Image 1 (tube, rainbow, N blue to C red):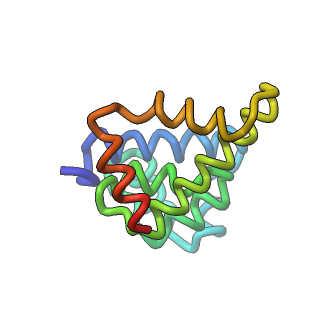
Image 2 (cartoon, rainbow, N blue to C red; image 1 turned 90 degrees about the vertical axis):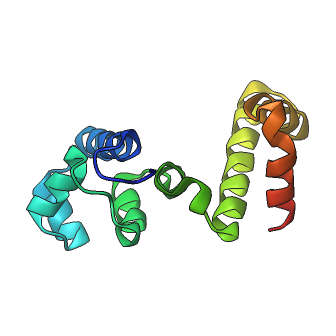
Image 3 (cartoon, rainbow, N blue to C red; image 1 turned 30 degrees about the horizontal axis):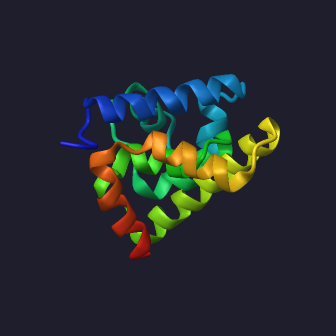
Length: 134
């Protein structure tokens, strides 16, 4: 099951949060003040003993400079809303455009090529339907 305490998904999110916090040299006590969550609860989330509550995803990611959609995808997977899927697609397009500009490639060509490389052929139809439904 996705998002269950102790699963690889929760552990991966915990590691991402912990590594990002340490990279920014922010202590758990500082996070406690930023998020209004107890130190012990933060410790349990970062150890992967507790799932990151959905209502803390945005403020936690904002405090650490992490893309909130990356975390939402990791935790929620198939439970993403249509708005989240749309926002994720737009964020991917922005990232692709930035990479294309740095590489001197036409943005549309870079988007198409990279998206086709990222999406397994068997999943392309389902993803296209879901994006078009947004």
